[in-house]
Amino acid sequence: MRRPSEPVGTAAHTLRRSRITLLTAVVATVGLVACGTRSAGTDAGPTSPAGGAEDRPRTAFSKMLDEVAETCPADGPPQAPPSGPANPLPSGEETPPSGAVEPIAPTAGPEVELNARDWCAGHLHEERVAQALWDLKNPTPADVRTILNDLGYIDERIHGLRQSGTAIRFSLDLRDRGGRLCMAGSAAGPRTVVDMCVAPATGPFVTGQRRQ
Image 1: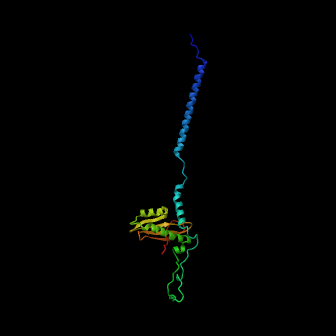
Image 2: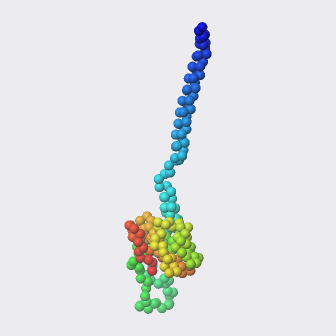
Image 3: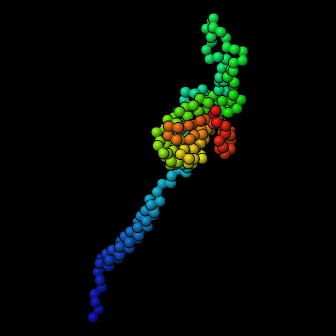
């Protein structure tokens, strides 16, 4: 005896349920792949602009130079010292002997080789650096570098930092806007000395003539 055939409605329902199960599996697989792709992108993170962090110290250094020289003239040669007596003699007083020595205008060094802005700023750098180093007792190169950094002088502009007896010697390259200003210092507590100097206009830094 033959078994009765399965109802047509039941067969259609089974086929439809198989197709839905297959479609669900495909969608889940595609979603998993997409999720993995997004995760890989997230792990990589955004790309930082090239050179951004490296330029910040230089920008801060340039800003410090501008702030120190804010009250200085923009350009021109430094003013030479007067060639005669600082104060005129009152009438009736004897004039100085004819053989008296008068101030001589410099012919070399920062006084004649630096422009007005650098000459003015040089005195301000001398004062601020020397004052910051005076209180150092038994200074070390690391101590001096830390103070110079705190004042805004970056490492690439600090040269020749070394121990010399009880003093720490160093030079600062302050060339800016075509200028030639530099500093030559000796940190030794109350015997600290900082003088402006002249560096080459271009090329590698070399300490030039110092102020006498």
